[in-house]
Length: 175
Image (cartoon, rainbow, N blue to C red):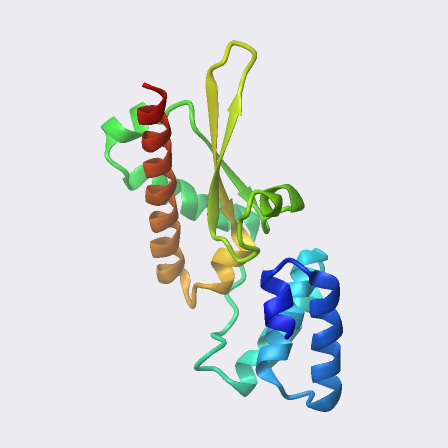
């Protein structure tokens, strides 16, 4: 029930069900993991990490070891991956901003984005009707779904390519 409520963005009831589950069985790895995700929503990342580590100790095949790095290291990896994209594509994307946020905010969730999304494209129209593109990477979610730095690089690369494809589709629709 907690997982369903979480994905329905009913975080209050998700928390209620998680607490109920953990009171019955403090070793329930899924409840521990969902508790961690709920703590991420509250931006209590230090406490979240504790619950993720507990879930990993109980069930390491389902809940991988926590990957956690500084924002500076994460940005360096994202910039490195962007630098690996062919030069002509980077030149085409020179006005696209890459933004790093911890998790999708409430505004992003209101646009039917999953709370576990790894990235998104935000398109902002300026006063002249031109589009400004912001490619957003969600650091915490990418770390949750990456067991090591190599997998993080792969996931960031996939996210960048996916969002670049969305930019191209948006430009095509405008023509």
